[in-house]
Image 1 (cartoon, rainbow, N blue to C red):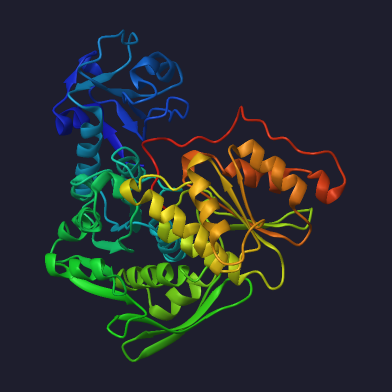
Image 2: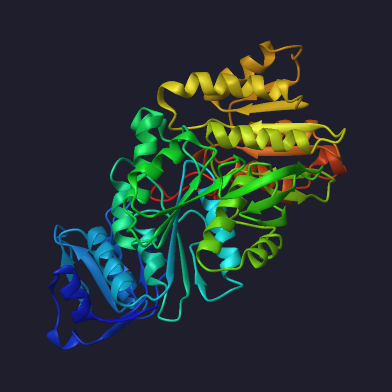
Amino acid sequence: MFDFTISELARVTSAREISDLSWSERVVSGFFSDSNSVIPDGVFVAIKGERTDGHLFLNDVALSGAGLAIINESFQGPIPHEFPVLVVPDSIVALGQIARWARLTKLKATVIAVTGSSGKTTTKDLIAGILSKCGQTVSPQGSLNTDVSMPITILSANSETQYLVLEMGMRGLGHIESLASIAVPDIGVVTNVGSAHMELLGSTQAIAQAKGELIRALSPTASAILNADDFYVTQMAESTHANVVTFGESVQSDFRATDVRVDSNATSSYTLIYGTHSEAVHVKLRGEHNVSNSLAAISAVVVAGVPISRACELLGEIDQVSKWRMEVTETAAGITVINDSYNANPESMRAALKTLASMADERRTWAVLGPMLELGPLAREEHDSLGRLAVRLDISHLLCVGTQMKITHLAASQEGSWGDESHWVETVDQAIDFLEEQLLPGDIVLIKASRSIGLDRVAEALITGNLSKVTGGPAFRPSTENAVLPDPREGGNS
């Protein structure tokens, strides 16, 4: 982490300092916004959010050893005695100002930023996984991709960092533009444009406009890594002065996958063509959709200077990315659990169902699905088509969870010869009860929904529980007290 003096931070943010001026040259290092995760001598960025106000915990972070707090001038509450504080109009804006200044004046690393409707976290993880074997690399865990978490990731780097890999989420037009102005990427990657955030922006064109803000922000010396198989992404090449590099299965791709093969474990292999060079690539992550994510990652790291043979070799060693993304666990009860419960949109749902189907190998397959959020007027159509796709893929059983999923359940029940194969329950607890009664050793269970639905609890019950129907032991009932809830400022799709 970079070291700063309080006076430096006051100057960069044009802050008003309410404290003893003798503290101006005190050195602080590390930034955090969670009062439960204090960094000794670190900077607490107090944020007034939807659920709580960080300003209310100033005394707690001071007693826990924080070195400084950045607070909003609108805060009228007490400030701990002898605790340095910088007062700014907006603490989130000030955090971004500090991160941008550090990136431009202190950071020597190659900065890679990834966005897209789906696959951006997995692509970010693959890029970081390769680069971490090539030099000191900093990247966020999970989907830390907001105007709070992304600057904090930048500020967690130091002068020895060689690669900084960032993820950029989107909450509306102009948001990625703002993040890009802070990060100033050397390489920008767009995985795809889909229907996630349709409720927010209203059209695929508007979503493409928002995702393309990353590419439009790149300098002429930077590189744009674009998905040649996605019409909306390819159009972004016309709006950038950066060097454009493409990936995909299209013959026009600079990095092209040919002879794609998917085995019974849903892992993929293909031949990568780059100019006159060809490489055999094996992707251990489950699902054919990870062919595209792996191509994006290889493209980015080769542009960053990693030899292509080495990049392909290192990618083939990665078998795990951020949690709850196609995590495959073989339980003691003999059930295969595919936990993809982090988030969901139509594109990632279809990919997950196809992966489940490819793993069947005469075993019973279960798709335990919850609703996809933020689809706006597309919600009914997309949930209906989801049920019909499950039938066409010959999934053995579909378990729909939640009121919104009645559409999916009815669509599956009315499609083809299906009837009793589709089931609906209202709550997560009911889903756990139902599966306890129905699952048998050898079954494969996919669990997927938008994050706030909480289907990760189903995966937890299957993985850690002692299901009586399968093992003959007592039934497992997970507590709801410690259920994982999403941070509304974080997240995005896979």
